[in-house]
Length: 365
Image (tube, rainbow, N blue to C red):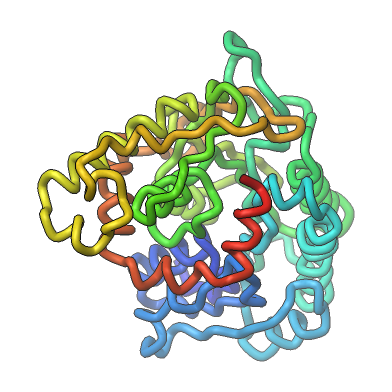
């Protein structure tokens, strides 16, 4: 296959940064341009290792600026867009939905329209737009319901989920109206390196290390399907390379956990890490295991999130059958390696925890 020229939107965010590293490592002949506006969750330091690579370029701009996107598409002769850029935290969408509509709906429209105006209309798949979405567009599952399939009716229950559902529909519409080559992937909950510490796993890790409570919503029995970000990146790669045009592929981990069981698992891993490495007690003196206590003692049940979906689960049969993809990183392995990454990269997560983030978390819990 001829070398691609990729534009990765939101490439300084959690999943986007991991995907940028993944693609650059596996496709050494491709040109990769990252477009990111560097909001609170975007961190250029996550891409620092690529800065000296001539194949890579970082551009700070807003996806809503259609003219800027068009100019970049022309300047770099970009033929593939991998669209990660989005506001993604449900709690923030409840408290401030406007930014989610602006970025997720208007921003996706802006990206699609820039591509429509700059790319030639072709039946072949040289010019392609891949849209990264979420399982939350499908709504909530009862305990015994079958997992989400690609043909499930959309039933978004939060402003975040609704904004992503709107963006999914725009992608489909641009294929059927203008003939644009598109694919969409809807993923389950991701975890791994470079995740901003407002999401469950990094929030629990950072709070444990800094001696703060571990806030768990409601009764803690909400269920999520957890997918390591490296597996997610491999799944997206498979869709871009081999997926059928105008198709949606669900990417999941086949790995359902209640929130409270996951938090207990993290606490056990943290206690184990402190027991194995005496230096951790000196580095993180506020952590409970540094004082001879169990990490689980810091669990605190808090008022449930508004409209909190009870269960998500992904049926990954379509991507497995058509593209041969299945998540390969076991949860015990993935969770342990994620904890190790945050222990080894204290400077990264302390740098992203600026005053505005701490103030926001304080208001929630």
